[in-house]
Image (cartoon, rainbow, N blue to C red):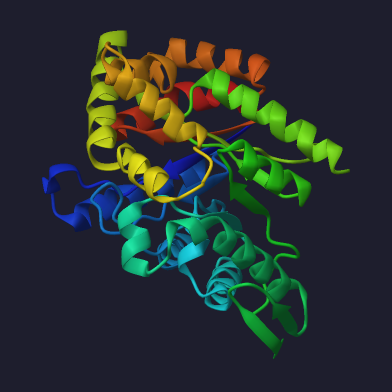
Length: 342
């Protein structure tokens, strides 16, 4: 089983200097480099303290310089907002600089503010993302790129550098059934989101597997990273307190934005993430408690080990991407949980 960390650079309340947020994260990655983690996965966000990391590729170069073994993943490069050839160049450059340690994850983005500021109409988000991914992959594989698409046209363009890896491992963030089916039909691997319940994750994985095999591809040899938020403590109450603080911050600064992009994307299929959030906000009970109980991995080391073992059997789970809701949760997981599975 493989383990990675979905790394946010959250700045709640701006209580400490931003430089401190970055340095703590870098120290965490140096620990990961020596303790058996597969990869750090960097989350790209803009114009929000939820994660102050507007360039996962620039951040990745710094991490590559401070580590030796850890793979550098993007979760995700927001491909809808890039010129696709610039995106192809930056990821390939990072792969060369890191010695071939890039895991490229791409997604379309959902934040209405980001779409407005970057000048991308929400209804164009999916087609722009899909065309950008196609262009990036062709730019890496073809000596000269030729492309005639809806948004981009190129003729005999030599995109350099080419990636050091041949090929770079690629994952697409997919949450809706439409996105899962499109990804499967093209043989791409998926990464699974941190804000759906465990049963929803299991259903989506089954749907993807059936669509993939129906398109003539195999699940064999694929890593399917599943992202789960993590809250740990010496007691269950301590873990739930960590989970509540983290979930309240997410609900306040991040998750509610999903409703904005869903409502403005005319005709777009509602994602599973948004459906889960909508249900939480409609329920009479505490939506934060629902998040802790049904979505996050939350508990003592013994409970977390048991929960992961259950997920291995029921989802199934082969690659867990944890998103720690506190530094103490990361340390406890690394010291008390990770060795059980390695």
